[in-house]
Length: 439
Image (cartoon, rainbow, N blue to C red; front, side, top):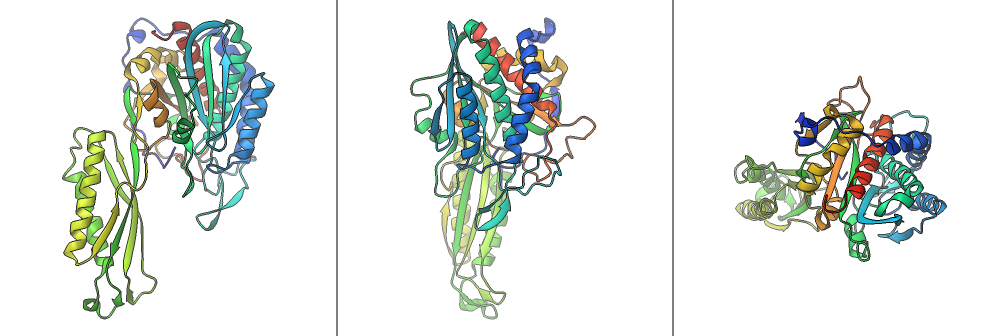
């Protein structure tokens, strides 16, 4: 997940026809597979957790994944988008095509969990020495999908259709100057010879209790766009501000005025939006007014038209506020390509909801609020009908609202999420394949 998610407001249960007709049943082969894979999935997750790798650097993780897929008799394609691994499970009967995705990369975070398998890996990131940690749960996702792969291969003779396994690098974002992630996998042809009828993905989530699943139709996670604004003034002595043009004062005014882009110019009664300034850099000495100030930040939206309007409004504010101070501005809004909205196909989500209820229990499948966090799974969801869901990661007895969140150095996964995640992803896959592409 690209940046820390806002706290999840647990809402009312999703209404469904299936619930009214009685609780759906978990497939016996799903329960059996979960029992058989239990210890191995935990072992995989702990291994990946102890040896995390940053985006576009997932060499060891990808090698471990490919090695196991080969041991299952599959022929994985490696090196896609640097370290991506893709394999196809061919069912013994005709049927639809499904894609299942797990992300593999970790974050530049120094772990503080105290776990016996905690990461001690360090690296250089942005010119600083930092720890590396699976602080978002991608270690769990990789372990879960390996377990699902194991189960599907064992039943492939009776399996209708085909399943594409996608182990994706760089979900957290490629390093500066590099490409990566889902967008690069698509650019390099991951769907060229295999276009799925449906795609499924999951994410362990700190603001859900272990045992719960969160899913909603339509928009789920926000589009995410970076911006960079440089205010250019003229350097002068701090005691003589009239001798130059102060970009610091102009930037302070700009940051304040930019808050009206959302609060006064965006219809947040329709959908929420966020404009956040994350960095402000300017000057090197207390008594020198610098030549320029550089600011960066993020924009989160759920609607393409609203997204473009905010881009235009922020550039307009930056240009005119700077001009009012006698300064000029260079506004890159957006600064590069961002992530689109993570969108759950309404028909597919409604159809697969009973599958999630079957493994978690009807009362444990809830509809989360819109999430301002972003996911580059959204690129896959833009290409094919998709359903993406959350799996509770916070142990019972701990309040999910105050528990260390995804991206925290203290993020602690309750490993029962591995069992629920495997069962949910496997049940969804089997129900979809056996139901056919038309449902």
